[in-house]
Length: 238
Image (cartoon, rainbow, N blue to C red; front, side, top):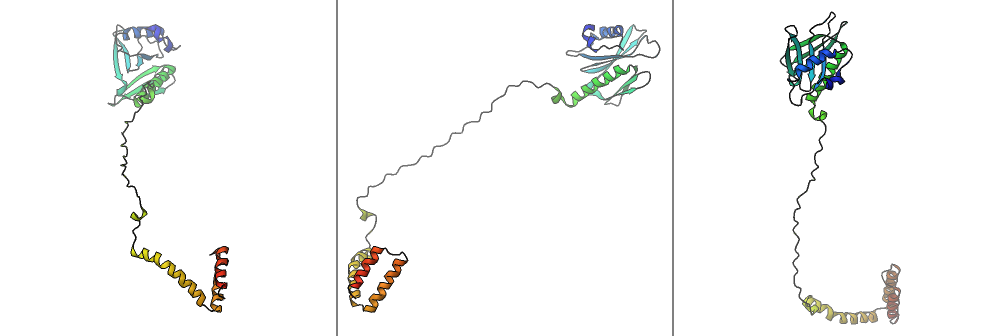
């Protein structure tokens, strides 16, 4: 496992301490659990049995040597239980602190500042993943399902053709009422009366009638040909 952790080692870490911790963690990691970073305590005096903090993609593990280094105590906290994490830097090192949702506080002191910062950064990333799982997770290539709309059958409008009866005579459409018959029969007598009236008019009346026809022509109500014909008829009696 030490080969897989070379990418997270830095000059402040003791490779022997990391190797000892990872050898004990090898049987403790769950399926799909990966170690993100390991920080090892470094006190001002010679630290024979340093505490360490291991952060994985699933939890925080505190590793504390016991019985003069013959055994190791592991205390872990899932990221779901972590409320917040903090780093406090001092002259001789930094303190990494995290709190749980049950108001429990854990602190590991005398960590190299660089290691404490990386612990804080990793913890911040994991907490952000819990808050925004959709934004952090890679977008899966889901097949695009084309939405198909059910075709609604359109009822065709059926226009019923009605048989039409053949009209053989216009008399079947326009009834010959007595009023219409009277109109046709009275036309000839009226024309005759009109001619008689012209013959019965005086010269002044005929001249006034001719003036009326001239006004109709000037106003465009009758054509020139019609006016000439009417004028000729009146002049016959003047």
